[in-house]
Image 1 (tube, rainbow, N blue to C red):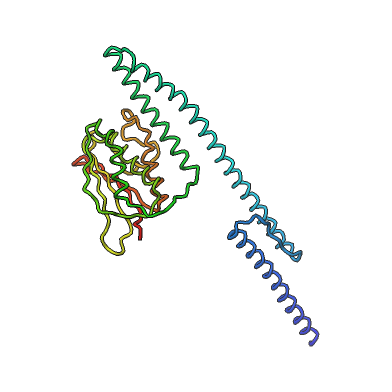
Image 2: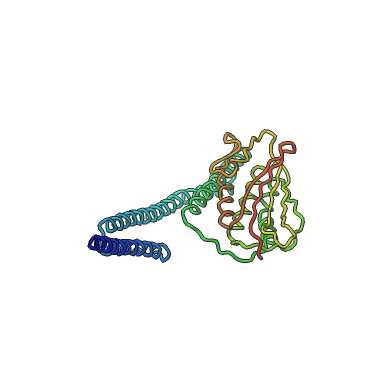
Length: 303
């Protein structure tokens, strides 16, 4: 009887030691995985030659990690090739477009009758629209593939918007559009200056294309200690026949009237992408009775 007890005790001790080794191996694998993730290393998992199942588990994990690394490298390579393709297409399109504009300028300086001058102006307008479409396409393609990180700094959003509006006055005057904007107090946000300029320029461009009258710009922020965002709203009158789907307004290539609208719909997609990069929010609302469209974006206040 005592022999049986001794054997059972030995078996229990062996099992405890065996389980301890198994747990030690699993703990080692866990630590190596944590190190690989936290330090972004590519070192494979190592285990002692103790248990075939643990060794097979580590081998399968290493195989999965290798496949994941291969996919990551393939993705980086594809992005690089895509950027090169975009760059090449950009050059191939911009070069003839520049030549076309040059020849149009020469024609404009020559002796043309009234009808010829009118036709030339139509051609110039179409060329400018094509140039804008190309720029929007390549800007959007670049943004979504470049993994750009914003350079966050303290920015006076009030001054930035005023500067953007002043640079756009000539374009708006051609369309007999005025900007209504109360002189705002200095409002400081945490953002990237270049991104904010792109956002405001794209919104001004969107208003200039689709507005049937003057544009209202409003800068709001809560005057309380725990307020987080500054809200900038662009409001403009639209056509009664303009059937806008607010839910799709920021979707790529969405236009309210694709039969008459020569826009790609990328401008607002670029706005949304950049605002999200700045940890902000973007949205729109439509007043169907007054036929007013309001597009706003919010960015964090500088604390």
